[in-house]
Image (cartoon, rainbow, N blue to C red; front, top):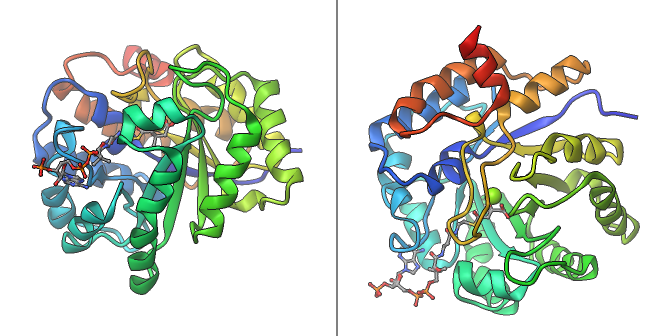
Length: 299
Ligand code: HMG
Ligand code: MG
């Protein structure tokens, strides 16, 4: 059976833009975020308070967050890797955050220069501040379905990291197919392992990159085992600079088209997402990958 509604977690302004080579002006990023929020997306992940040397594109996170006109109905989380990032985020008025680690050691080393255990230790003071400030925390686990450096990843390792994040006070998890290698039966197998271990399905979301064209099929498989939070990126923008070969995220437009066509509600206006993508497209220097977007533009 399929859910009657899905929470679409928009990551375009963060996961999408972080991989763009050309520096996008801050003002246009803010407008892009506002257009996505006005499209009815319940969550618009807005930026990252990481090292500006790691991700130069998002070094304007503080300006974005302080100038953004927010809707009270929308969450605008940002990525936070450590206490320094949390302090910068709080100073910029952030009220929702995400921490991020992975299920494979080599990716974690390349991405955040830490072991998985060290990353979890770095989150402790971040989670403590979040608790004091009543700020909800999402926890990303990357390389759940495969690692660019190690290849296959043991689902048991995913379970251990997931349990540690939930025990540390993370409210929800996002399971990342960082390099877009997952296929549907694998998705079901990994999710069933987590669910059979007692992880609550409402606390799990899926995050597929569409590198090999399997993202929508993977979403359908995840919905069939009860998942109702799906990450996507307007236009299919995205990737991860520390994951060689990672293409864009699953496109929000393609996801919405499939969900709405199956009678699954999202509360999101697909035409308005297309308009947001059309707004940011000229600043990217390449065409957005979303199939639905391309079809809409050709019509
Ligand atoms: P490090 O070099 O080990 O950190 O980097 P450090 O503590 O030694 O600090 C080095 C310098 O960075 C210092 O500056 C710090 O002050 C500064 P210096 O004294 O040399 O001038 N620094 C910071 N500056 C601003 N904000 C901060 C911050 N922290 C340190 N928060 C670190 C470790 C984690 C900081 C770095 O590796 C980093 O920022 N990594 C982020 C990488 C990233 O953003 N990757 C993409 C997001 S993850 C992703 O896309 C996957 C996901 O989509 C899910 C999926 O698809 O799988 C979520
Ligand atoms: Mg990602």
